[in-house]
Amino acid sequence: MDRAAFGSMIALFLLWPSFPACKGGTNDNPAGTLELESAFPRLTFVRPLALESPPDSTHRLFVVEQAGRIFVFPNDRNVKQAKLFLDIRKIVYSEGNEEGLLGLAFHPAYRTNGYFYLNYNASNPVRSIIVRYRASSTDPDAADPSSRLVLLEYEQPYSNHKGGQLAFGPDGYLYIGTGDGGSAGDPHGNAQKTTTLLGKILRIDVNNPGVGRNYGIPADNPFIGTASRPEIFAFGLRNPWRFSFDPPTGRLWVADVGQDAIEEVDIVEKGRNYGWNIMEGTSCFKPSSHCDTTGLVPPVWEYTHDVGVCIIGGYVYHGARRPDLEGTYICADYGSGRIWSLRRAAGGQVAAREMAYTHLPIVSFGVDDTQELYLCSFEGKIYRLK
Image (cartoon, rainbow, N blue to C red; front, side):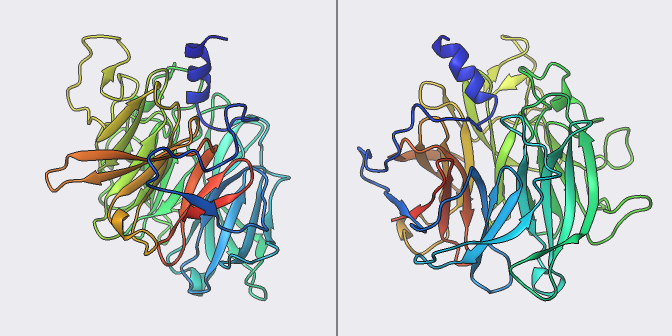
């Protein structure tokens, strides 16, 4: 397999069964600007792809495993064991490399209602399911499996590009990242179609269900009253694997995994079109030249596959361990293990700085209740800034 084919295959998404290019260490850091350490040396997980902290002041962390398990443990470096919070492996379809339990979000009022939301894949037909569960009323470290309530389902035509991220915005609505449905090049043009939920950021109201469904449509969603799906918040995305809100500004940072050549970071706004599959980053994709870019929003930052092959979205940093990184957006590349900080100027320009070259298969980021940053690595460990 030549380099272009290899890069294309990884760039379809990021969940690789083995890591031949990963050396498993964090010391190869020529710039010496950022070092990582194992956050919980005694804990190891199987393909951990999300870390979340509930808004309940209990100082706990939850780690999601792709196959369908969620573990909970105190945010203590010396913790020896994580407890099984929920196991839904029997209903999760994770046969494909990019399928499984892909997202977890806690309701802003989790302290009182115990609600949390999952994004996972199921089979027959293969589809994405957004579902709500509730924590046990007798054990805060356990979920109540009988509380399952399906909010939304949509079919998936191929085994890749599922998106999977869930997050509540500052407006209290639930945001959902959906991939374009897979294969390569978006053969059905889903990302540009506003009649399908694929290739989008969706926004729904989980507190006020509408008639005939278990969620509502926010009154200011941009496509209400048209032939388009009213759940759509923004479109033209290929595979928005991870996104996050910056609390002080409310900005929505989205990392969109590229095709053959370019990885990109977008700041997503309501009703806007982010270009795929007309464009890959700032370059024409279909057609390969002289494409019509009218109305398309370019990324705020991009890099080519000479640098990495799969962008992993992170967070704007507001922790205390690295004051010099305050207000910068931290992201990484799954294939190379590179980590960058992006600083946005008042005029909107973004300057990037490479902070580390780790060789780790970084698959996701998370923050705790003090806004400290963590990295999930597919070799089974959780890291933090040193």
